[in-house]
Length: 253
Image 1: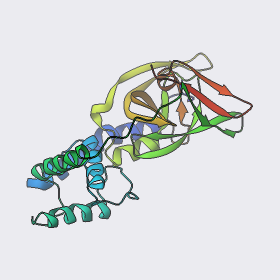
Image 2: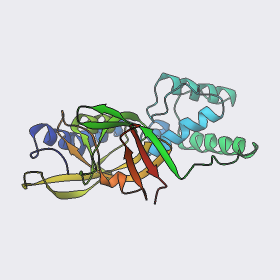
Image 3: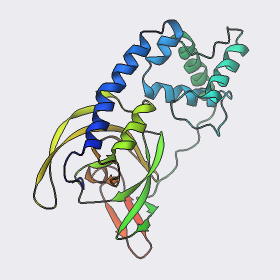
């Protein structure tokens, strides 16, 4: 259950920015685009990430480049290098035809390599915990975009992120209006109730484990990020070893 006393003005602002201003600004911007620029701008975030990985696999993008779906100078230069090698106009934009060709080349390159044997994971995974006051924190990679420190909170029904984190994820294109799934009544520790919006995080990575489509809610700007039951319940077994300060995760269900 989120640790907040209700929807603060900051939370409402974050929700409105994600649901309203972001979409309005995006639509106005898209109306000015055409051709490859429009095709690139309307491409799903997951495919942007995949195309960056394809460019890396083809050797045009450095392995040190952050794969975040946001095409900064490194990615634009990689696209230009790929286009130049093929004798195409070096626009730095990946229209749909170019995107499909990058995917085809990367698939062909992968098929020529012998696949290594799958990494054998043990029956459990141990993740170091960091003590912070009376709580433990763990690093979690969210939507393959940013790594954040979450409070381990088995009493929280949902994963909770703060309003500023929600805005950051919206700005890099990893959450949008389509990810909001409705609202939920939360019971607070004092017995009172509050209504909160819910949305889905496409991916949460902790240690060797990944959970997809995790239900989350938005908390106050200064509120803690909570790793609640919508993530923890994905695993058959999980436990805290207080002596060694590690989180033990079993195999995902």
